[in-house]
Length: 111
Length: 116
Image 1 (cartoon, rainbow over the protein chains, first blue to last red):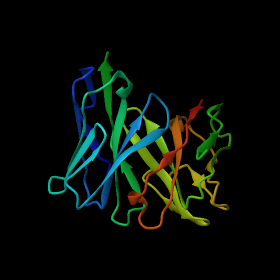
Image 2 (image 1 turned 135 degrees about the vertical axis):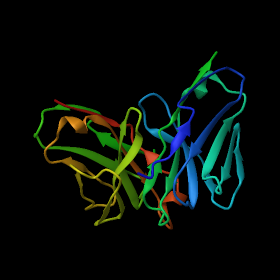
Image 3 (image 1 turned 30 degrees about the horizontal axis):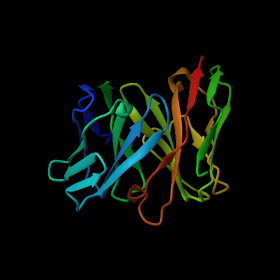
Image 4 (image 1 turned 90 degrees about the vertical axis):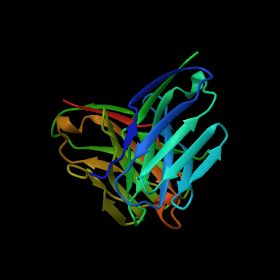
């Protein structure tokens, strides 16, 4: 399987702290996406980073990509209770049409 | 409102009884896909479709069928469901002018299936 893995599997932090989660993948990629899932609901797209980018920001989110290590990280700054969710990275095959999601990081932000 | 809809949202069935889960999107997206989500395994792609009459297998296609006769609809068919197909299923769509991985996927609310 070419499925990626997120690390850690679960993360619990206090409101206001930063949360960092990592994604490792197995194949060469064109782009990598991060998604958020609130308990049992559909996934919501957060951010896309292209293979020629090293870092990207969107509001309180910062994503980095290291293609040499086949890894990406998602940093959520100044976390809020509403950030409590599972976070998944997604990569695609070279053709870009088949998706592989990681196993997810479950984030709990304690008010 | 732009959305992906799935029906039914919850389904309990018995082994061997054929079922269909419908998926429809109103965004005129070319790309549609089905995933299953299981604890500890994340999301795994079952089938995807680049456009009408074009479908391809994902990572876990065994036991499933799909069809894409219209651009907006992408039903998932379980001809003879088995207990190991008990899972949470998601449909997703995206525009696909180039590689689908370059585009945001929009997900439906999910269908929770229990096969007894």
